[in-house]
Length: 509
Image (cartoon, rainbow, N blue to C red):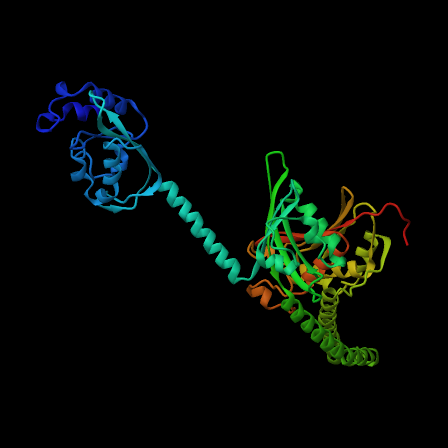
């Protein structure tokens, strides 16, 4: 801009050549050109324009620059003259300086009219006589900042609309002060006052007694750095002013500082009361139907076993083979019915664990012995490792092992072996069932332990089942305070593992 000003033909301007300029004008222009902050000057009653390099980008490309240099203000800023003229006149008349923050003043630049936001000040500059000789504009364009703020506000409005449409409650906890903020819907659910903040204990007090400690423990765990801050739990709330219980699901996440301390804990609630009622009705129906089916199926199995004992295998091989297939199918159906009954018991909280202390290797060996017929096709290997004691329900953990081995055999192509192993990791016994079968796609892995989920591929569709086996396994292991997980690579097989806490304090039952 210094070069442009020096090379400008000022002889055609009312100001004349720079040699005739007043010292005040020369000094002000010099200050402007040296500044790295955007500055603009209008000089004289004609308001002749000067600006520096820092101001130059605000004029845009192919816009007012360089024609704005030496131009009269009214000619340059016709599109905004009604807005800025009163401010200029105020300062030129000796009035107070002006200040405007994030002011929308659209200007013509880049070949079109653009909405531009400015923070600026107009102040007078004295001439040689001590009168106001010009107006100095110190300004910065804040368009990006304002647009970013508008985007945030728009996003916030959309989020609030989505939350309102989904009928969600929202909450935000400050772990340092234990103060809790919730939206109006959440406060109405919890029977809380409309005050801005409340203590967390006031919120947890309305949680149903059987769930209260479990929720408190989940919150404490989520605010531990090693947990990743994740929080996902179902529970019942029952405020004093509403005797009808409300089932909710809470999902949230804690944020941590560099010292691994929780600084914020926020999330949402979904009211799942109707969903829970539907599940109860569905489970009641499943339980009723399963019980009704179990009675004739038990009789059918008894008749099949009687016929198998009376059949002369040597003289009637066809009948014997048919009865064996029939018995296998009856057992499959019995397994499906028992699975549905177990799901119903889990959901209704009626599952019973008969825990005792035993060697986990003994249970694995017993389960493996029941696979004598399938082992003709798929060799089953067992790596027992050390004798490890656990306190668990023998029958239900056996059910888990049986299910994992059955799946490994079903999903293995050819005569590749299935390997069962047991080893110790810290204070846990870890049981692994590994196959060299088809493997599982990455997209399916996060859903394998969900109820009724089945892998959708050609091989999977040919295998019977309702997708409740792995779900039951996961629930039973969680009831034992253990973990279950899977590792798999498509085409290279899968490894299903689960852990159980060791018990070294008690003798074997």
